[in-house]
Length: 282
Image (cartoon, rainbow, N blue to C red; front, side, top):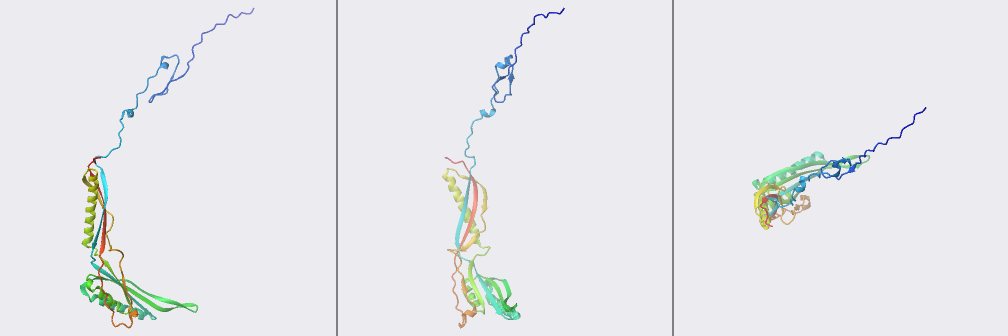
């Protein structure tokens, strides 16, 4: 005899947890709450960032403003030396004879220059060259002639003898003279005067800028030189007198003296200066 099942028993269902989305605030962690818990109904906002309480600080004039200027100077001065260039040439079919002629003519030029004593401050021998002139002969080459040259430079401090010296040298055999090039000595006080003038100009310009802003200069931060000073001929480049070699002056008894008038030079200097000044009154 089988048994009879009794009536089924129904158990009450428990409420299921439902995740809720809770608004997040800055600095808060993600939160999932159960609908049955009281924490799901409210959330505490995070404290605001400290940066939000900082006041806005606009950029302003520093307590010690800076001013940078360039000072320039141009002064005209008389030259101190006259530079003369001399080129002695030779040409011959025999190499030994060409060398002897070149040495003889070079000695003749040096003797003329040294005869002026202290009026000539410096004498220097520059380039010296002897080279063959080749020509084709049949299947090969042969030496047709030998060319030689030597370059001499002289610096004259007494301008009254510069013209006479140039014509005397040009009267020598196969000798060419160029010049004069008006120059200053490397130790000339004109360079120092140009630098001082450039510095004074920089200070004057910086002071004018500061006064225009109702301020005044308080300190020097930096003073720099833009480069070596230059001494250039006033109004343009050097005018060079070229006296032709003796062979082109054949028939003349003596070369005329050339009267030379010194040409003034312009010395330039430039500096950059940076200063501190008081705050401007704007």
